[in-house]
Length: 242
Image 1 (cartoon, rainbow, N blue to C red):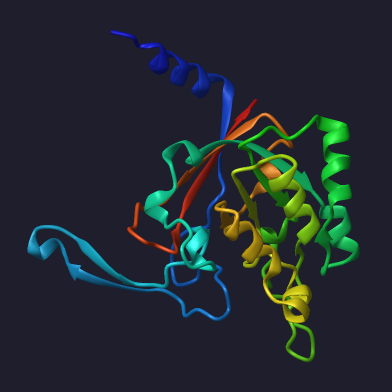
Image 2 (tube, rainbow, N blue to C red):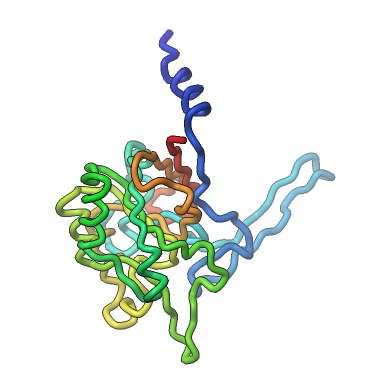
């Protein structure tokens, strides 16, 4: 019998770092402000012989996957995302310096090209995440005095470039929306609509991208195979060279 994959796994444990890119799942978990916090109750307990919990939670809660049909009728649901799309090369574009100067910053094509000038071209079928270190903030919505949100996101031209010129499979970010907050107010959710309309998925509210190198890591995205599911909480893991 071929045990090469087992041997590869042992080598990975010795030579790689594993980074959990997901928030814990609880009522305190960061989530989009329009959704209620999840509720958890004990349906059966040890006095019954075993413990079982019951959850009341929206599909896109905490760190979560958005399937294409989340925004676009007729596009893929969670059950139609191929398993090959759940294990991908991971590229992490660091824009933390720009976000420090402008919390409303939207990633540009120039950011992507500058990344590639330093690290090489993003491969096809990759997962591209933007690192903003927003997951380290306590106030993730960052409201101003008038009640407006301020957080960074993707720019439409950058997302189009990744799809049309690099043929990526998925994107991700540490904020609760694809679009920068001020852009979504002004123009709608254009980046999110575009990426999902292209039959790509995305992961929102990622964490600890600061622990992942710009290139060379793999991302494993786990989520339920919900028939016609628009999204679900996800567990994402990066395997990085030491």
